[in-house]
Length: 225
Figure 1 (spheres, rainbow, N blue to C red):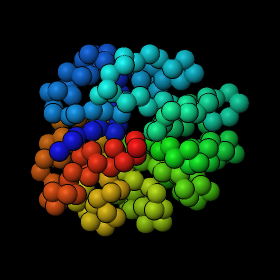
Figure 2 (figure 1 turned 180 degrees about the vertical axis):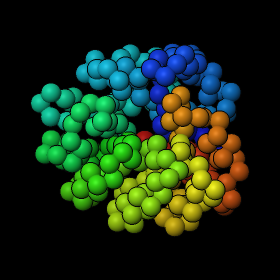
Figure 3 (figure 1 turned 120 degrees about the vertical axis):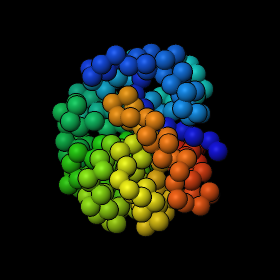
Figure 4 (figure 1 turned 90 degrees about the vertical axis):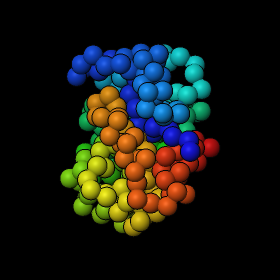
């Protein structure tokens, strides 16, 4: 079973000294938890300047996830990116505003998936309504957001979710059984959130083995082509 973390940060973070402050430390953490690869956003792009596109070592286990910002003061969408991250709170833009919709259409046309934190369910609903072909993976949803998550997934077939904070009792099983395992992706959100918990959870899901394999890495590999 291939295990791929769809939601990981590399680089120093404001909350403390973390092992993944550099790529070598991150790879050691992946080894420790038996995670084969990770889609990573650089903390410099996330918290400081996505235009600078901080360097990341060329390692086949690390898939770069650029932070993209819509509008004339934003970034271009990298032509090779299969997964990007939209951070409206960190970079102060309206997710479903005119510029956001234009970028979402470009992403959809290219078959690029957007990672988006579930901070504003209304904005995500408006964006998914305007651009229904855009594949969205909701990350860091929080275990209390199941109602908001279910409402979005009921209406929008291209919305998926990661397991980073989907940690309530049998929550992953409930989502997979209701919407299909193809819409659930293993993610940790580390180092801002715990990585050992979601990894342990993955090994103990009460789901068919084929569904667990999809969640563990199969769905991410499909998004990456």
